[in-house]
Image (cartoon, rainbow, N blue to C red):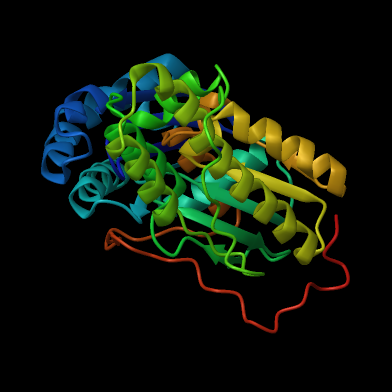
Length: 343
């Protein structure tokens, strides 16, 4: 089966072609430079740029794969969650192509796509497993059941981890998007900078990064010399990574599984991946992370997940709609892992 994937949930216009689990092409047209002047994504501007780019990006992805529209078995498109106007552009394009070519249309949850990218990196890892989904808009711990159902074990109560990194970078005067700049500068080490706080929230698997953001702001307001910026970046990254890793490994242990999948844009932070891998090894948990090109928003992950749905006989009609929000349901408070959970 050959699937064309489309991703327009935020500020990346992406198309990819996947055949039988192999990524034949993956094109991403980023809008980062466009939105840098505002220090964040402007929804209306993002939607208009998607309109300009979506068809050329599709053409490039097909050309790079050496295929034509007639070779497709289906078209998978992100239809939730995301910026509504941006999602509409991708879904409209997918509907038009699916109708014209009389092929399957598959709506894909953006979050599920990130998890499929991680599982694909693990050799198409089969559930059950635990997952950390961490990006600019989401920070969640997810249990993927043996029946491929998704249950939220914990999520952020305020800022997402990537949002926290970007906002802290902004107050330190770093360019947008700030996360990569924080990681780059943090390599110099903390250099005597005091540690920043961690919000553990007791035994909960939830996250909170608003206090950390405030702590960084207070240090900047007290006077931050340029020479101290790398040290503050290191302290910031250290705090975020510490909380993410400890809670993720704890989640995998509670779920009784032996694999932890990482997904989302912040997974491009190699300090996070390295720390999770080391902590997982100590706890008997194998950590699986996607390659860099599958970490941030991309259509290859949408095509990979769409292929799974298509193989399962799932498809959508031309009435497919978009959802700006589609939260993964919370796990019951009295949930216990099945005796056969460990893989």
